[in-house]
Image 1 (tube, one colour):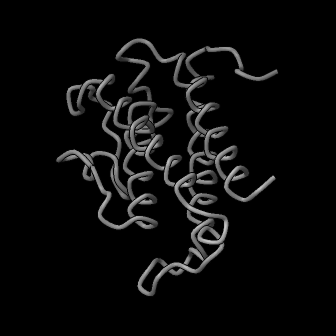
Image 2: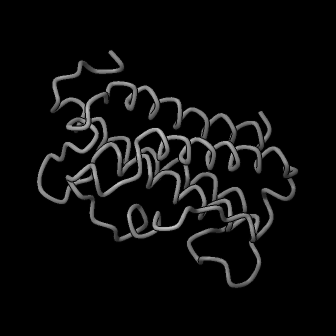
Image 3: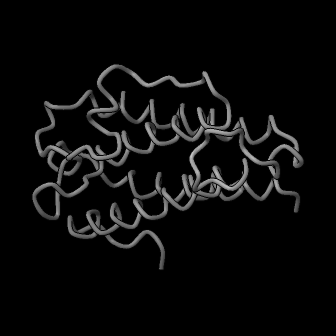
Length: 164
């Protein structure tokens, strides 16, 4: 399997699992349920995935950022999830943003050659990325970390396991 195909499989697989978790959240109380005060909840997860995918996309393709006003404060690194649904845009809007940013990120993989993916990022890029492909690998890892948190929230609400 070529690098492009492997990265595409990884990033789409991570999102597929997250979508299967998110499908259980229905009521406003579920979307903002926190295991403890300040904990991440499903709505924050969705917005955070969109904001973070936007960061990853803009890292590999500068000038492609497309974050709605206020989303960085609500969902960006260091944001603290609020238990109040009224503090957020509608769930459907946040989910659409999350999905659009992942679609754009996945399309970016396919727009690059295997050679481009294996090449170093330009000077000034975050030091924790070793090459272009590492950005997409980090997107997969990041989503997996947060989907684990989402899974715990989902189970605390009484939903059965997605797998097993």
